[in-house]
Image 1 (cartoon, rainbow, N blue to C red):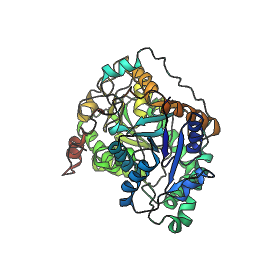
Image 2 (cartoon, helix red, strand yellow):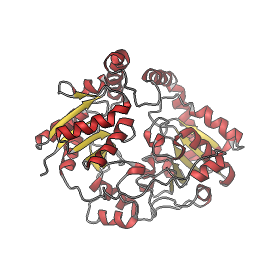
Image 3 (spheres, rainbow, N blue to C red):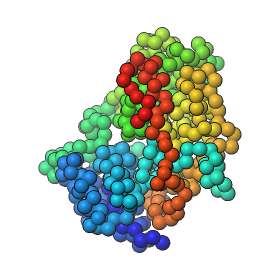
Length: 435
């Protein structure tokens, strides 16, 4: 077993990171922690930590000195999009140490992702069917049952426990810290209050739309919306702007989709309501002459909608993987870990509307077996049982095999191959074709 000195940066708004530290220490690791804000300290207490309270420009040099002085072998962090985490990955590469990125799982439910050095467009997971099939050989199908209970109330309370100390006292303790979210936490909470007030109306509207689409005769494509502030959009997607991407997809649908088809946008389950998707998408549909063929649903049964659809359009959502497992045609408009020839539609978006290509029959199963072997572990960030299971599995993976993925020569996913097409149909000029 390797000797590890683990440096933890930011984790989720839950005690998961502390649980992971305890699991790693039981295996003989030394665990260090750098806090950036009071919210970090709340979920790490009463454990000791070091603090970085300097300016963003000072962070890379601070980290280099810290890693060298403390003998750090591995850096562990939630996501690779936050500026401090992105800089930490670069430092890890420069100093020839490991960086481990963890997040919610690609597989659902009750899975977590743990990848070396990056996710999505920066993933080390193979991008060709031959290698994926080889990784899957001899592996059993991973379980797909829901093992752990989920509580939105607990999630909300943890989120408050992280953000409120930062809002009230952060200016005194860490004046240079800026939250990684796209909007101020209080603005986001205002959005959630609005959603709570309108919940009965939204549920009735969702039932009406769902019934029309599932029971109706017209063929339709499903577009599961992601969160505009998600780094999967801001860092790993063409244009880096979900609103522009949605506008481009609607324009492409209007130009190329058969007149007998419809397009249904599904709002993300934890969207805060600030994007006003229904009004925004209705206006775009009207402007492009397809108002009667495009609708929005905020709720509904995702699996039933996938089963009834003729294809899924996504940026890089994990819903794309769910659809592939249902053997539905999927087009991923940004580099996704499942965007591989033999799985997703590889031609243009214009062609997808008329002839969507389904995955090769064996590839979805091979993909999930390969992912479970290399970059997925069972567990969650909320609930004691989920956190303990995830921490134990993640600690085992940190101490386990390190040569299954090409960390020194990862697949080149830097090319946003749909950016030129999307920019052209939306009238956006000056967009390149590479990230």
